[in-house]
Length: 317
Ligand code: HSE
Image (cartoon, rainbow, N blue to C red):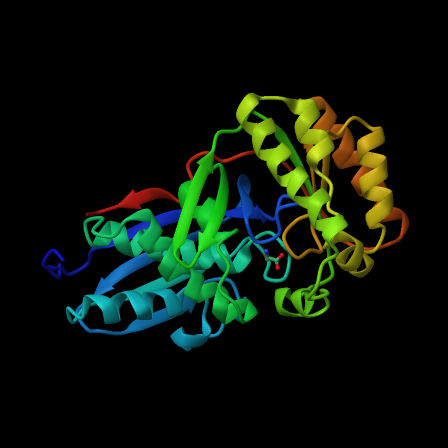
């Protein structure tokens, strides 16, 4: 490993984006990076082997680094470096925790990409995913990479395996993504707890047909194939019960021209893919109408697939 030289005042600011894990049929193995929303994180190098976490905006983030999704990956990174250096992280969160939009992953991925930049990019992307998964373990009790991998690599990623890590970037066509975040909180740990531990073979056959179809659809730019592969017969029937008006949003969006979509990560956000911006905006209006009618506050986003992942926006090193 290269020798790390401490330089006083070295700092970097990154934009760390939201992600949609699972992409409906690919539980724990597929994920997609979004242009919006995103967190802003400023990371500074310290002349001491410790991690300091600060939040700018009143979010009740744990400041004990081992309990913080941005902190735990950095603790692991600096222990591996063992070079007497540490990091201070200032987080401005815009991705709400418990939204299903990869909030914990954005913190974890943003901190490790920023720290790696300050270190002269000595770690590879798979190394960064390995560190960032420690943040996911803090958040949900298990290591999964279907948010942190697309957040670090950008675009659509397939996580063929996490032990050992095997991440494949899947090329994707330009698509529009409409997201609605109804204002209830679903903790990933709880949303995992309610899942059945066994799957019927007939359901597994449908599911792996859809995963293969979705990947082929992305790679061949076949929008119809993408649409008919966005089907989940295993997870969605269980988790959708936690999301008010889920069926209305899904069926209404498809009737309004969406290719398809479903629960974003572990929910409660719902995402829909569209071939053009006009359709994506029509779906946003429909989502707004549905949640206004049932008097449940919400946020909506019309965005696109972010091909870059975590982005350095300011740096003095
Ligand atoms: N694959 C994970 C889950 C993603 O669905 O539990 C959580 O964001």
